Image (tube, rainbow over all chains, first blue to last red; front, top):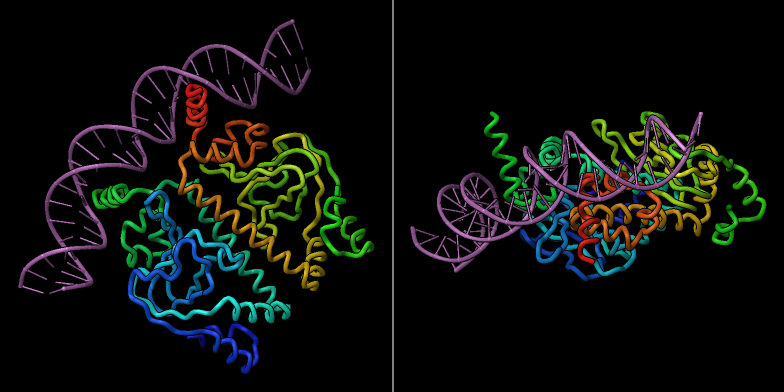
Length: 191
Length: 191
DNA sequence: TTTATTTGATAACAAATGTTATCGTCTGCC
DNA sequence: GGCAGACGATAACATTTGTTATCAAATAAA
């Protein structure tokens, strides 16, 4: 699982062994809740197989904010970093194979990594990238119509459209399931 | 201008003098463009007086994404960090007094700061906070109606409503000026 | 297999929001 | 003081999007 990351980092073999030993593998069925609303996040997950969504409850409706697939890491960052009760729920969509690491162990790794200028800079870059992603996502929201956003999703993240049930996609796009159906049927008609 | 920040950081007097000497003070009228679309951002601004908006051109309409006021720092982060042509425009709304620092000089400061564990951690925290802010902003967009977002703006950032022309606020909220007018008139009627 | 659940499409109607146009007010500028 | 441009309110109409309800198909569970 971790071999793909191995050559990206200049870390000694011993350290690498130590770090990977912090992770534990689990298999869970679809619709497994990995983090509940109000719970303080203590684990960060890496997805070996399956997909996960992050959502929150808004007056009984669930609103999906993110999708994650293979090789991505998932946590309620704010809850994880600040030990706040999580406002979001993390839940599998498909049966999944996951690796998780505790916050304590991750902190050990991070502390060490931050002392290595090279890796530290990469850490900063990753953080920036996350922020940029949010900015892009946000800009597309105020800039584009639901139809345009759906087309962009098909183009940029085809996995989502294929693997994720439509009502999750609708809530991710900020529209009703009915409206998403209408958007799709329009394209069928045009053909 | 910088004295307010002075005691927040444990930096020697000499270093502090050096750092502050990197900044230059300018006064500009309202509607001054500080960064044009397509330009690579080479300056970071701190606002002593006045307010600034960040916007981008979307098919001839301008969409405002952020407002900044006194003591806040402003830059097209992505352009500034990665030397990309900026997709956004930075423009004063009111006549303003600003301090700017070049990317080169800021990099000198950052490089030194990153070597001090205490300040480095604070830098990480600041980056996280930025990301969290975007997340919050984004969540309110998919969660709340324009009316709710307008009320939240009044409550959380009353300065914006008082100092910023209404059509900028409308584009910030993602609605037309007409619709914002309607929202406001509804509240007047209810009273 | 049979049944219950999930998922997706569609229609009919309601509500929200955008567009265009007009008008009045205010403000900065000559 | 008067004028041009910026700003904001409003009306009328068009379009988008949501809501509720119903049905069909796919899927999972018993």
